[in-house]
Image 1 (tube, rainbow, N blue to C red):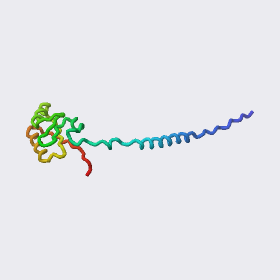
Image 2: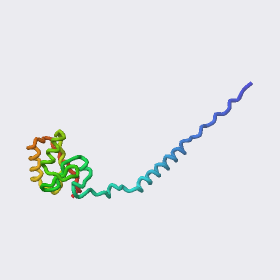
Image 3: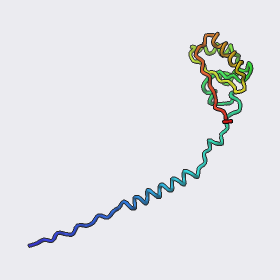
Image 4: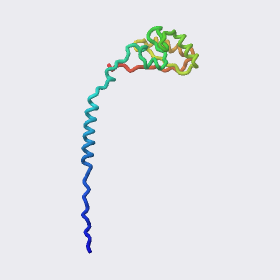
Length: 131
């Protein structure tokens, strides 16, 4: 007695629907990503350096002008800022100067800091607009 072997079924290729779904998702994310605008372009940095929250949060001595010093949102004298820094144990001192401050005045402040025994000074800068 001969038995007939049943014919083998051909497996259908199911990758075409998967490719369609991936292609549709790709198109969706391309359109969804390009609709939203970048809000960071509309943010303008503060004009005055003592108004910049990023710089104030570093605990830096801010030199806003000739004999105008700010430390932790309070106006201070240079001597008071040096005393507060040394009372905290000294070490690294951060200094942020207004862009309009002449370099000789900044140099005079750095000479006073060095004379007070503060050797590690970091000057914090802010990137300006391209000109």
